[in-house]
Image (cartoon, one colour):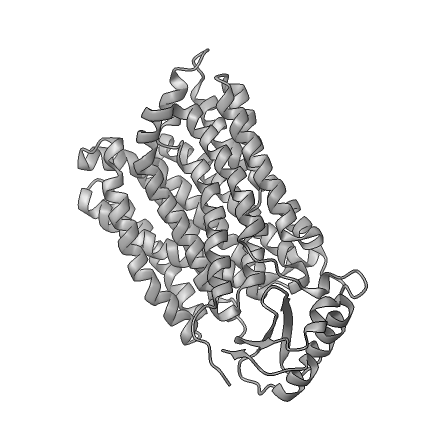
Length: 468
């Protein structure tokens, strides 16, 4: 029996290509953050601060509104089809925003950008194409991409602003979105799960049952709290960097970049320990505690430059681990036939966190200063710790991969569907995924249960290929 260590080429290709698509979405948001307010001052009619804030926030609001419908549609009509639609909407919104100098039209364009809410479909597709023991690594790639995109945006926005201006940046992200469609079409693998067949479709859990699922609800609150705190604190942190360090806003990347990169170095061994020794719950709770400590450090050291840098480091270590762990846990706990719906709810909570975090963070900064902002963030983290302590440890699952030697099966969806149903009846098998491009079958099985491999080999008409 051949043992294959680490991620397979398919998983690496899937993870990297989808991380690039996810990063593109964040690029469209991050690139304008450090420059849009200044650009808006020169627009006709001298837009108010409220209009500027609405232009920035409209993206997150429509993201929240459309995440769930797009996630549900991806369960029904396929992940890639929904991603295509989302990328087209994102491109359209980018062109609308870049074409006009009217703040109201820009607000409309930003809303259209956000309406292309494909995060749920992308996350579900990553889950479809990766094994449970490698899923956190795949999500870590996406988390790292977001962090790197943020850092690159802080460095690149002033340069791009000088070269092509804010309208040019909008146009650039529009063209990149169209290019991303080609990546999805020709680079990202296409999974086939026969459970979506109309003749053998299993009844999916109701939307109400997804909302009432306590384990999913704990994670949904977590992603809300994580991003609400992020938006609230970054209303205060840039100003603190400028005052305590005497740094111009165009120089802030000199702090963010090394802090982000060093936090990634610490994140990797934490993720490895979590997966290798089945300590996902312990690592998860410790990371939330670490986030709470970061918020307390911010509150105390906000006016001390090196204290602020240390707080940022602790924050990003915790943030990167949690950002990678949360979607992985969602994908493990969610029912396979409603994975897109569950991730849609999750991403809706994330977008609502962005929206309300910015709203409340700005209000608290005006009323009570930075200490009230970090007190709010610390309260969120304390509540999250309380919810997380009572969560169930994620199921101990490993993945077996078998080659389909009987190639005639690959040409007959009905035969494949029958084989899939027979595989699911084998003791210890939790889920079955068929990958046509690879000619393989992935089986999610209980880690601590002996699987009758001979039966699997017989059903696939061939030789066992890969196991991990």
